[in-house]
Length: 415
Ligand code: UGA
Image (cartoon, rainbow, N blue to C red; front, side, top):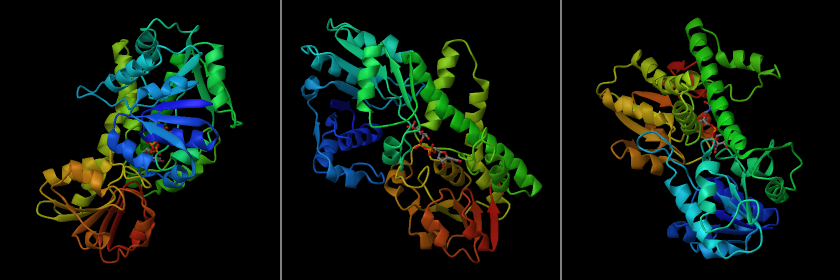
C-alpha cells in the first residue's frame, strides 16, 4: 500500500521503516530540514536499537513537501503532542499537521484513510481532527475515513515491538476505514480489536496509565519491604507467577520516567477534571512517582552530608537502551542534589548530550571518574554498570545493579 507518515519522530520513523520493511511504499513528511537531511542519508536522528540497520535496508521517501502525500492510501499522523506550560496537552503541532494534510489532499479523488498515531485525549479526533479534515468540503465516510491506530512501542525496543505486537487496536469511523487500515498490518497474526475512535484513544491512555500504576504499586510494596528487610524483587517474583498479575513491570526502583507514562497520566487526569471527575488514584501515582526518585537522596544522606560533597551519578537516560532523558528520574535527583549543596559528576553511555541541555552546570565525566566520587547513585540500569569495580565505595542503588553490593556501603532503594 502507499502510506504517508506525518512526523519523523520516534513513532513516525520507526513505523515508517517497519512498514517499508513489510513491503509498503512509504513517504515520510517532516518540517525539520536537519532531520530530513539525516534520514535522507540513511542516518537515524534518534538512538534506537536496529534502526540504522533497517534504514540502510529499506527505501523510504523523506520530504518536507506535503504535496507528496496526495497519492497515499493511508496517512498516519505521528506528530508529538507535548504538554503545555499549563500542564495540559498541546495540540498545536497535531492540528497544524492536520491542516497541512487537509490542504494537500483537497484535490484527491480516490478514497483515503487518515489514521491518528499521536496519543490524544479521548474525544480529540472527533472534536478537533475530523472537523479540520472536512474543511475543504471533503466528507468523512464518503471521501475519506478516519482511524485511531495507537502505538505500543517502547523506546529502545520500538522495532521489535512494531514487528511483534501483542494486539492491534483499530478505532474506526466506519468499517471501510478500519478494513483499509488493517490491510496495512495484514502480516500480523495477533488479536485485533475494532472499536470506536474515542475508545481506541482511551485504550492507549488506559494501557500506559495502568503500567504507571503497576510500577507505582510495586514501589509502594518495595518501600515497605525496605523497612522490613525484605527483598522486593523476590516478592515481585512470587507475585508474578500469578497469571492475573503477570511478572512484567514489577521492577522496584526510583520509578518511571520518559516522555510517555508521566505525560499520559497527566493527559488523563486533566481530561477527567474537565469532565468534572477527580482522578485521585492517577494523581497519587504521579505524585508518588516524583517522590520515589528522591528516596535515593534520602538514603544517601544517612551516609554522607550532601553540602560540599561530590556525588557521582551513574545513568541519566530514563531507562537503558535510549539516549532519551525526557522525564528521567535522574532530573529530579540532580535538582535535589544541587539544591542541597552537592556537586554532581555524571556519566551515561548515551544520554549525556541530551542531559547537558538541561543541566549544563554539572560535570560529565567517564564512569571511572564517577567511581572516584564521595558517594555514588545508580539511576539507570545500563548493562555496563554491572561490570564496574565498586569495592570501597558508598553506593545507593536505584535500579538493582547487584554487582554494586560489593561496595563498602551498599543500599538498594527497595531491597
Ligand atoms: C511506554 C510504554 O511501555 C509503551 O507501550 C508505549 O507505547 C510508550 O510508552 C508510548 O506511549 O509511546 P516507554 O516510555 O518507552 O514506553 O518506556 P517503558 O519501557 O514503559 O518504561 C517507562 C519507565 O518505567 C522507565 O523509566 C523504566 O525504568 C520504568 N520501569 C519500567 C520501572 O521503573 N519498573 C518496571 O518494572 C518497568
